[in-house]
Image 1 (tube, rainbow, N blue to C red):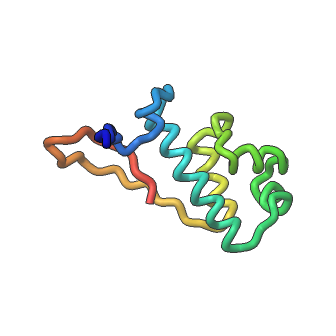
Image 2: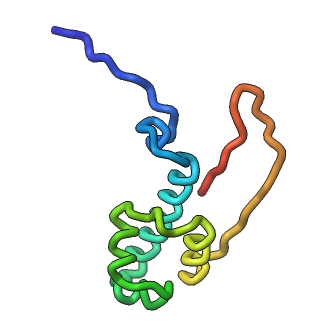
Image 3: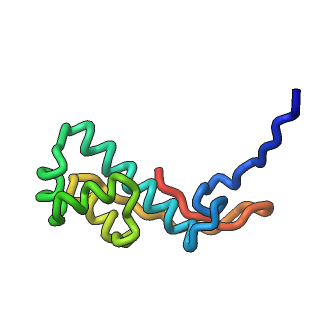
Length: 106
């Protein structure tokens, strides 16, 4: 038996695989996940969601398949508002001594 070798990730898969602007990409992925979750909970079809968000159905499809580079973080936040969600942005001083300041979506 051989030992399995593995590497612990950073918590950002996009950074781990070398995607440019990895932190922004992770934030977008979290926002798209929220959009997808809302669509599923409301049983919205892509055509219906596209109408609500003011975009075309093929763009919804691409976004939900992970092709969301064309959408800014601001635009994704506006999509959440269009889906009747409150979006709250909180800025606070960083307190961690052993970690860098970061962005989070919850």
